[in-house]
Image (cartoon, rainbow, N blue to C red; front, top):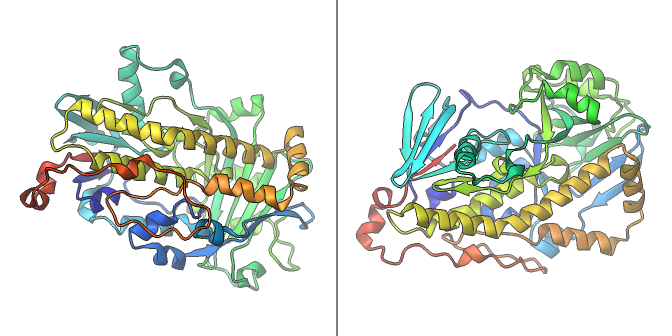
Length: 451
């Protein structure tokens, strides 16, 4: 979307043959609001989302133990947080780019790069060429694997980057069909309701949260120890698919949930009200890679930093990556050489890495906060007693980074807490651009291939 708005030619290659509405919902707050405002789709985002004022931490007897509130975000950071159903967000973003730029069923087998460009070979026997390759293909990124194989041969790959992705949790997620407040009373409330149940003796936590479409997103996380992690390793899968979900559904059927009324519902009711092919199981890995780029190839999002969803930071940090990377790509000269491209990628990683590491630590803390270990229980006991001023301070740290695209009119930020400095805002497009060149950007700017 950002490349399109910057008049930078691009092609998107998606490995899936069709788009499946897998996953539940995403929490988007003030850290991404400027991006949606710049792109003119913030109002539509709000129309498909639902304001979330707090997360309720609940017990198995369906009582609220305490809440993590998001009070004052509108005043402090210029925007509040909203829960948005993942399929609707995907559709909103996809509608911002020309459909002919998206190529489905393109599974990357190999990539080659050098001084003259990048070559991609796909499993269907076709090939594609470009000047830049952006790997946005998830935790088990084929682009990263090809890049790392090349770097390893050249003895340029850090040893930790060659290690497998560690995972200690397994998650099952789904979304019900539209329901009525009679079926799920919290759907009758004006704002979204997020309830997380923490068991006293099970190695699980489970959530429900309401959407603007009168559906209920739900999920359950199993916390693995060393042995159960090995047992689940055989089912490690980069796809969010329904095939592996059935057995885990049976394990969580009787878990009690909070619905906002007197009805004693369970996750089994959520499963019954959900289309089975839209229930998915996935391993949740955690790792920040040291290497984000090499020559003409660069990684963003889960491809270079995979976070637990418990901190709600994975999607927003992927968007921040896209903003900063687009700024640096837009600043490249026409017909850039490999060294110029790599310098832009280095600047992108340098700008992003500290924010990513901070978000990663917060994500780990939130995962530990929701877990079942002794340290998790101690953490919860401490947080219950943390004063409001300290919670606000934590919120400031999480919402301080509110990046914007340098090549679009800046969105007004009305927050009392000003955003952190953003170096890539100073990056400008080549000044030698003439009126003729402006009308022929697609012939002169570097071609980006996004996987």
